[in-house]
Image (tube, rainbow, N blue to C red):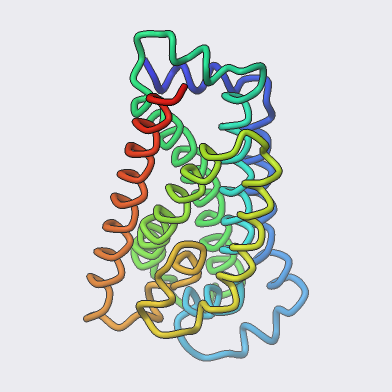
Length: 240
């Protein structure tokens, strides 16, 4: 019910076109890169998937993060417009349920964007590396890994968007953090797993013994940011 309610709120906000357009833009990165510099990439030795990820994922991840930032800001802008958040307080609906609904909707559309990117990488590998076998299973595992890496960023951004009635404050903070995250993506493993930096991590570039650590840290961060939102909502309920 909450999930359907959140989808209904977003029908005329441009939320879906933003994610669809952003996902297509990120998906175009490997296609354009391969079309323009075909011989450069096909001349490299190794697994086609690793080559495609190494050369394209940095920009693709950054576009995906910016997409999540815009989506989170927009989904809460609809709550604060015309004092909608205060009106929701009068209804027999838990605020935590609304947050979970927003999280579910944003995650769903983020998955759609990542699915488009996965399809683009698969097509690029099959089309331009036809003489090599593409590890499709590895591609799917990598995209699953990227989803987990994106969760802390998504949850933290939703929390930040819920704090400010002005969408421009949370949007500005999100954009700044996005570019800061891109600067520390190659740092120490633990530091590179903070929100806005973790999505740059690639499964094939992480040692097998560190994969569980990456997944565990991102899940814990997601839970912590979710608890922060619950605490904030309880405090806000007292003073509103």
